[in-house]
Image 1 (cartoon, rainbow, N blue to C red):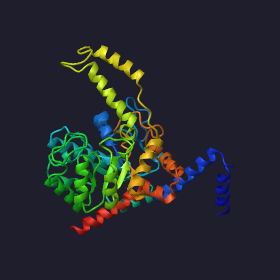
Image 2: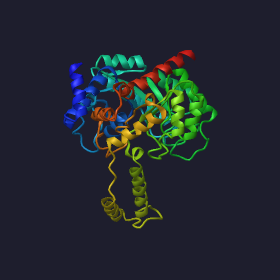
Image 3: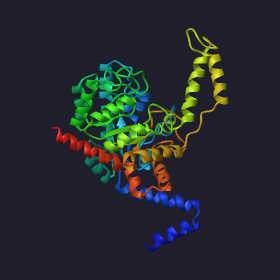
Image 4: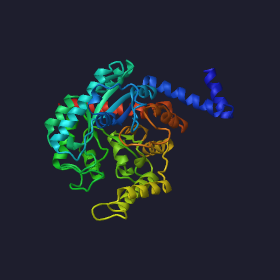
Length: 410
């Protein structure tokens, strides 16, 4: 007690240098994560492995991928350990552009990949479906591995397929991905239903009954509202930000944040630069428009049909218009905003690592960086208990409540 009081006095007097402050935040993060599993709501590592490695994904060494050529991986076992991750929802994503039955087939392959990774590294990973599973895995020093099916099209309009995913260990369903589907509107496609159709409401009901989380990342605001009105269990946004900071339709408005608070749900804040930063979002739109302006076959473009010339012109444009840098502090701003509107019990972390390309926010370059984000929240005045909620306790509460709802519906 004496040492702690002396430390506090020294900080108040400005005696301690900045490095000592940082060291104290780091020590507090370590203490928090000894008892609370740090849970990330969304990581696309399985998809990245499938896309880049093909059949090698089943056998390649996943301990250290920092020296693998090509696009850098954000995730490997060494860096997961450095980042003190305690639980991960692995996305079992497939493209929403594929035919429905092919989406089902590839979803099963992705589930198989996650399960095979866990089986190959049992000292590192443990499959988890419930909050108790997560706590047991964390207590044993392993990373609780859960799965999220990232798109309602992946059930191909069939609740039996949803039930099969649940049996195989899937813990949530994202109601849509980037495309509007037959029963729900996406945030990034033209709306067709003004939210959920009657079948979409059945999907929400079945998710509740199965004890799977209803994930509202990627869906339109009308779909968010319909799902929140329908669900009996708390919802999650597995990887979304605050729309008041960056008016991207993938983010969550203050009105919906208030509904999430009333629902008891959690918004797990994304690290994707285009969702974090308004400047970056606008730059990305300008960059896409410039590409079309230069070469958009078969009818349009300043250098139509001249790809080399168009590429050189685009490189010159990029040099004159560099991508705006996004920072860890901007991600923390989203966390603070969600907490201010919905409450600190309604916010978590959902990185989207290995799913959004590069560069990532400065200070959040890979899965080793989570402690730095938690330290930033301590630096902003969050208590240890509040940071524990952000790290994992909030989403664990949502999981526990969802399990209780499922039991009541049996």
